[in-house]
Length: 260
Image 1 (cartoon, rainbow, N blue to C red):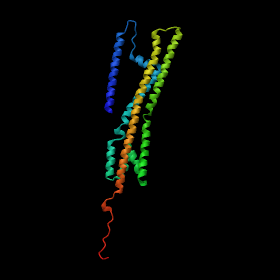
Image 2: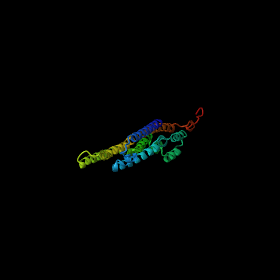
Image 3: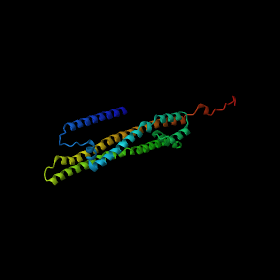
Image 4: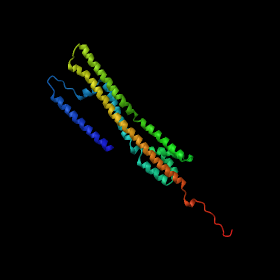
């Protein structure tokens, strides 16, 4: 999955570089003595006016959240292999008190589930399994709240962009009404540019936010299901270990003298 995302990112960056280079060549080649050269900063940063400024700010926020989620919502943080090995080792060695202390101090998803299950050990296996499932559902719900902001940004970004689009069209028609005819193309292009730039930034906010939100949601569900299966396996081994007793612990039957 990481290699696929890296490949997609490289392809998108290369396509963006080619598009920018092509646009710059076209702008340079089509330049006339009376033309006025406008930088990309003027078009994409200032062209959307105040609606564009809002969307640029939301784009920065969504980018920061995406980076944070890729760092925090990953297997090595939520479901590390070291926690699995430690819990399995303690169960095999029957270090139950040490296991309770370890799960209380470990922040992994599996430790939270096992810690809740061990707390219900006096009430039987069914209570332990139910407590583990409840703990996993609670942790999954809390984890799912983190990328939910991306879902909000992904759904509101196009709406704000649409607001800017409507605003640009209104400005274009107001220019026509003010002049009483067909305005100068340069004046009309400014109003249309507001509509197009606002739409561009709205899609820039929405597309990455919704893609990463879906990816993080699937990750959380996958890690939760994996933690549930591993926890059930550990509980089954814990149940078998508590039922099994060494032969040396079995009471010996006293020998009965012959003839008695």
